[in-house]
Length: 287
Image (cartoon, rainbow, N blue to C red):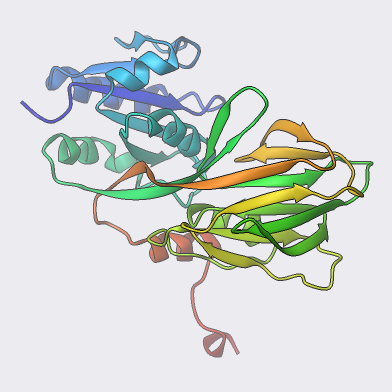
C-alpha cells in the first residue's frame, strides 16, 4: 500500500490531452488509486474519474497533479492550500517556473511519490480581504490603474507608518515565487523561494523613488490608495477580484508555507529559472 489513496487533477482549460490522462488512469488502476477531477474539467475524458466540486476534491485528495503551465499550477496551489496537499506540476507546452516534470516523466514521478521518494518545497502566500471574502495569492497582488483613467497613486505603509508613495501604472506585492512574474517584468529582482517576505515593485513609476522594496514576512504591510488617485483594480495572481477607491487601505499579510510543491530532485530552482529565461552564459562569454 502506497502513500496515495486519491489523486486530484487540475487541468488547463484549453489543452485536451487524453494521452496524459490515460497515463494517470492506467497508473492509478494498477495501484488501486482513485482519480478525482472537477466536473467541468474532466467531462471530455472517457476515463474512470470521479467528478467532485473543488472543495470536496481538495478534501479527498492526497496529491494534486497540475497539468498545464504556471497559471494551472497557481490554481492547484490555491486549491490545496487549506489542506496543505502536495502539488505535482507537469509541463504541457511552454516551460514554467513551477512545474517539476515533463509528460514523458509522469509515470515514473507518480510511482516515486506513492513510494515516498520525493521532497516537499513549501511556498508562502499573500492574504488580503476583499469585499466578500479572503483571497490568497501565490504570485502577487497588484493595485493597477484602470485603462483610460488616471495613475495609481499608492502609499506604502510599513509597521503602520507611511514609508514611501508611488505614482505608477501599478504597484505589485509579490511573494518570492512571484518575483519571476509581474514584478520581474517591471524590473524587480529574482528572490529565492526559500526566503519568506514581500517584494513591493512599482510598474512604470513616475515618482522620484522608483525602486523595489523587500520586507520581512514579520513586518506589517499596507497599501493606501491616496486621495488624488483614480479608482484602482485589485488583481490576485493576474485575476481582477475587486476595485478600490481613494482612501482605501489594503492590509497584506504573509502566509508562511501556505503551499507544498513536490520536488523529485531532478532540477534546482535556479536551473528552472535559467531554462525559462534562457540564461545560458555570462556577459563575458557573449562578448
